[in-house]
Image 1: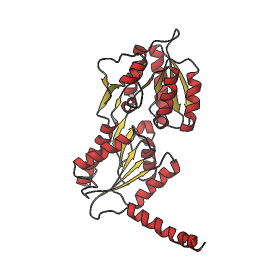
Image 2 (image 1 turned 90 degrees about the vertical axis):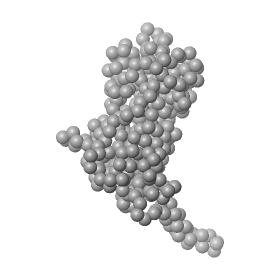
Image 3 (image 1 turned 90 degrees about the horizontal axis):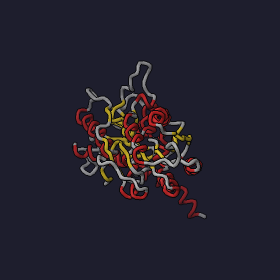
Image 4 (image 1 turned 120 degrees about the vertical axis):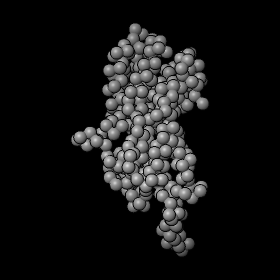
Length: 325
């Protein structure tokens, strides 16, 4: 009992020491805060690209030319807000955010520290512009609009034969994510123009995905389109497994999801997306000024397909699509 009491008395000191060890920073070098909203192998490539760009510009932990404070909210929104506030107390030089949930949380908590976003939609799609249509003055990095979705969705009628008179494509969208709802609305109009019936169902959390996907697959859909939102990223393996078992091919607008089992996509390379944001952040770190900087559109997009998935469904990818590496 006495030993237990001693352990409990020492525990706060152990925790404090652990925290200090995690944030052992070098004096005289810039400090970068990087926050991920959740754990995801595809989205994680953006952070790899971001840090690679910083290293190429001479900013790396290994060379002790940068302090990096990395945190992951593991999908918990209150934790995400706490992380941002913690980074503010640490007086970081910039906050790198991935994906949109992190970006929005950072915007809500600071108007002073430069924010370099990645895997985020445009400020308009995130609904963070002011009444005059201006993005927050401290928002930089790289964003994407919804134009690329048209290309990704339009390939489905060319590659998939309908079981009935009209091609039916299933879709899940997150009602709480503005960009997900915007993508759904856009695809509704596009589906009509393509003569496709869009069978869409809302989900609110990753916990809903398995049940709603099963219900969707019971409605005789011919293909599934993975809408670009955080819920789909976090539940993609669940979706692919269910669709494969039901004989329904999955298409997407995110190149990273093709490596995880989708048939084909036209979309941003997330490593390059992060790398582009990192290049911009490096300019800021070198100049210590945001003068001349503004948020940019994604520069690198890819047309890719998954050979194994394509073979599973007897689909021949167009020649302009390259096999995923």
